[in-house]
Amino acid sequence: MSPAVALAALAEEELALVLDGRADELDALHVRREALMGRLMDLAPAGLRPEDRAALERAAGTQQLVTLALGDAVAAARAQLGGLHRGRSAAAGYARAAA
Image (cartoon, rainbow, N blue to C red; front, side, top):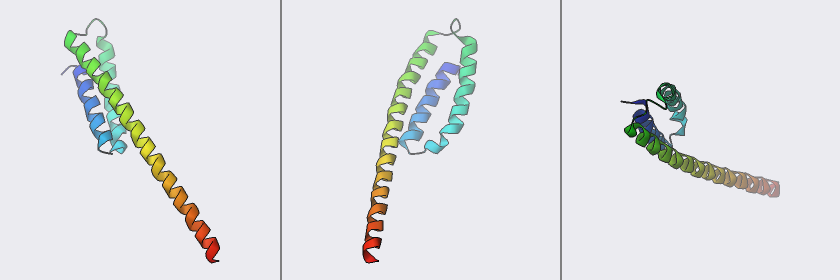
């Protein structure tokens, strides 16, 4: 499998991890991506076949989806943390009132 095709598959794997809420597994995936990028750079640009270019375009599109999904996950985490903060503030208010 060419490095470009492998990168496209890796991008799809990354998207699946993010959508499944398994962002803690992304570091290992990024190590694999760096290795593939090194192999790809050894080929580029003269060694890229049309199917490699198509695979890289697919990987770029998938990577945009990953970025959007990560943004959604961050927003959800912020909202959850905000709820916890409000709950803690309310509990502290009740504690003061009870004292």
